[in-house]
Length: 111
Image (cartoon, rainbow, N blue to C red):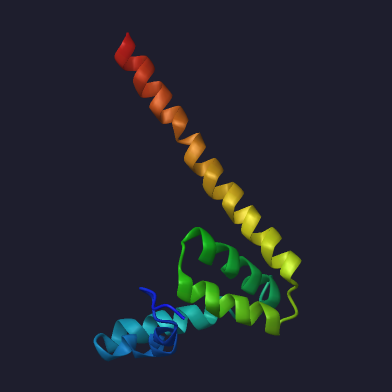
């Protein structure tokens, strides 16, 4: 197996971010834990959302974590891929809609 820039073993070190900033690290983990508690959305739904966002943010650690989490929660491969396509559509749509800003600027400069 070839070595990659991202070391999958680093995901297990995530909890260590509190070592250099204990207060802020702990506040983050408190928030993170609260977000993923059952609420209006199920843990399964939140895992699927997290997987889609992991792809739009291009975080290999999050992709690994939420692929595994999703499988453990019974999310199918087809549901995962569909969620990723939803994320990709939103990301590309957001990019394209900013084209209106460019069009407005060009139209103004051409006056």
